[in-house]
Amino acid sequence: MPQSLAEYADHLEQRRLIWPQVPAPKVVSATPYVKRLPEIRAVLWDVYGTLLRVSDGRFTLFPSDEVRLQIALDKTIHEFNMWHHMYRQPGPPWKSMIGLYKSIIERQSMQGASRGDLTEVNLVETWRNIILRLFEKEYQFDEGYYGNLDEFSEKVAYFFHCCLQATEAREGAVQAMTDIAGNQLLQGFLSDGQSFTLVQTLGALALQGPLPPLYELFRPQTIILSCDIGVRKPSRSLFTVAVDQLRTLGVQAQEILHISCRLTTDLVPARAAGMKTALLVAERSGLEVDAAVLKDPAKKPDCLLTDLRQLRLILFGN
Image (cartoon, rainbow, N blue to C red):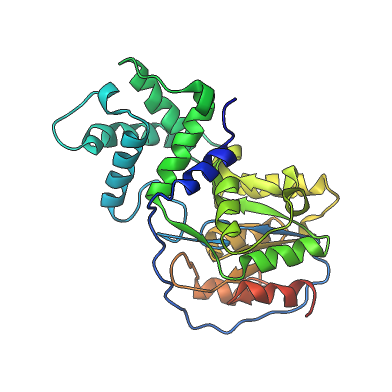
């Protein structure tokens, strides 16, 4: 029976592979502003950069240093035995793959989205297209272990991203999420992310400490990821979907708190959709702050956190 993505991720951890590491945080000087928001019934986390520390500060398919992309492609080619089924060029394996990778992503980025929205690239679909090219040269994979083409593509995409961008749980993340679950508040994601984001996040959090059972943490309606909607932040429709899905659980927009380290692309559109907002100012990486926006009463966040553990003061007053 094929492994699930979670089982596959656990298996990779058992192999003790060498993954990239997130650089040490560069602290930002900021004064927290926390106040009790008693009407909050749901917390929606931004993932990459907020709940998880990540190299580059946000989810990306093209890191600032292209050498990291080259290394990630090389490792993926080796891991899944792709080399002999590629249209090869002289030089290291990544040279034969990087052009195809970039062209597929460029084509995906040009696919239509609603006016004013930004198209999201589905990394699993990117690798599915690459694998289809490998089939032209008789590429095969173990369906009994990896599953069908779609399941295999997701595992390849997950492995590739683990090689491309380091992730680790933000300090205090497990405690904050446990507090939310223990007080019967809903929580979930409102984030740019991929189909493997939940598994990746739970894996990183588990290294920080034990979490409540998954059914106590999330509902299906509270996981809003850009890959599922087809658009990325700050697209208005992503926030509209979040409000609509939470409404099916009896939660209104003004009862949702969105937490992110990005003000303009995340919190401003969240507030425009009717949500309450909290800006996390914990480190320089990933932080996006505009002084003019902070002074605008219609756009500024309701709270400013410098540590996720301060969330208790906002939600519970202690």
